[in-house]
Amino acid sequence: MAGLLIGTAIISPAQASSPEIVWAASAAQAPEVARARDYMGDHVTSITWVSRTQATEHGEGAAAAWAQDNGAGVFVTTNLPAEYVAAVVVHELAHQRQFAAYGGVRGAVAHYGSTLAEERAAQCTAALSGFKDFEAYGVETTADCTDGELAEAHKLRASVR
Ligand SMILES: [Zn+2]
Image (tube, rainbow, N blue to C red):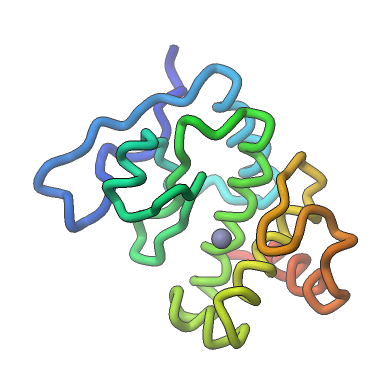
């Protein structure tokens, strides 16, 4: 089915000499990515599906998804249940906004003061979306976010690249 293969066939620049196979999302997962893109107004950032094995090989441990600040974009593991894909992708697209606004991962962490604060801002953006999510970094719903974190979430959603 066309359209299920999202993103590029390369995991990272370091592995560019041996492109990885990109696992296609399921028919249930793919539309959830579109919902996240629409919510964030981001139809540009590369989103690549990877297998659990590829994520482990990439050093991402048990992460369901991650974002890179080197232009490679967002990576989502195919074993992430479809019901969580929209919220998780919003979280990762929020990281992309942070990287663009504050100067990559290092700049973003410095801006927020800690990795946890940087993560909570992304997770509060996901919570703000209202898409079904699981708890991460102490945040599952907007009730878990401070007013300041919600203000930042609104800003991350609204920022225009
Ligand atoms: Zn994160």
